[in-house]
Length: 296
Ligand SMILES: Nc1nc2c(ncn2[C@@H]2O[C@H](COP(=O)(O)OP(=O)(O)OP(=O)(O)O)[C@@H](O)[C@H]2O)c(=O)[nH]1
Ligand SMILES: [Mg+2]
Image (tube, rainbow, N blue to C red; front, side, top):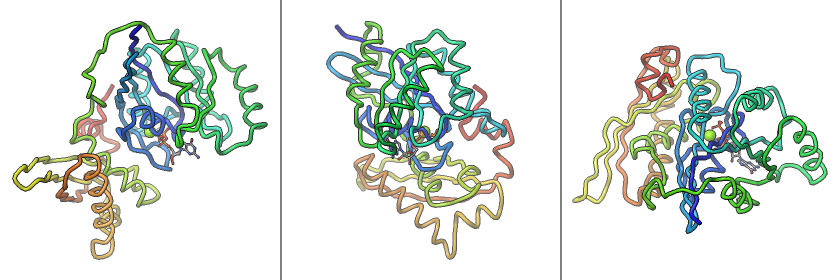
């Protein structure tokens, strides 16, 4: 029997949603960092097996959003509710169940979708604590299944995939077998740059950064891809931080991004980065749309 369908991956910021999707797909289609609110868009990741096509939708972390950018992110996450066959709710075993998790459970009560509770990061707690957590969480919602995993190492992910397959309906292969995401190469390149900025800079800088690939040209004769990208920040001071002393930070960002792109695209990359100040872009609906965070 061949089964297929759409699986929304939801949870509070930093729960490990993107890490899990990447592990299941077997490729890094979504960026991951230690900082919350890394993912800003819905990102599709596709896993094909002999018996099914799993179409995952990774989402931004759901939380009580205060700023315009964060509100767009949360609405992008919630938009999957109407487009999927089932949901995976990820919770982080390493942090206490809190306000954001409860907020999500309230949202679940309004859907009829089957929900699998995935307890991630079980490497961070001992067995007794895990059993206690499962016991407590069972009572807050009627989950279809509860699966403890470690997304980082892939522990128990096989079991999770079996459970998902059991829930999915019989269906065709919706997408070509070699397709792993719905996102363009330009988007993936921009995200790799944003990941490096998020890792290498601090405080509000990652949250004030939007990366746009302005040109992406394959040069077959030279055997490389030439990428020009703009790093948009909100203030002159942030521009200074991104560039760094004598350009040191920009060089670090560029090198780290280029190395990862060369691996991902299996070719040499010539990467040019520009830093631009777009005053308060994250507060501005028009700019949010231009930078790829439209009103969902
Ligand atoms: N110890 C441990 N860390 C993990 C595990 N899974 C993910 N992480 C780490 O948790 C952090 C957040 O992971 P992400 O995959 O970016 O989390 P996310 O839910 O996509 O976060 P947002 O996009 O910000 O909502 C990263 O530093 C991951 O390496 C795990 O099983 N164990
Ligand atoms: Mg993410």
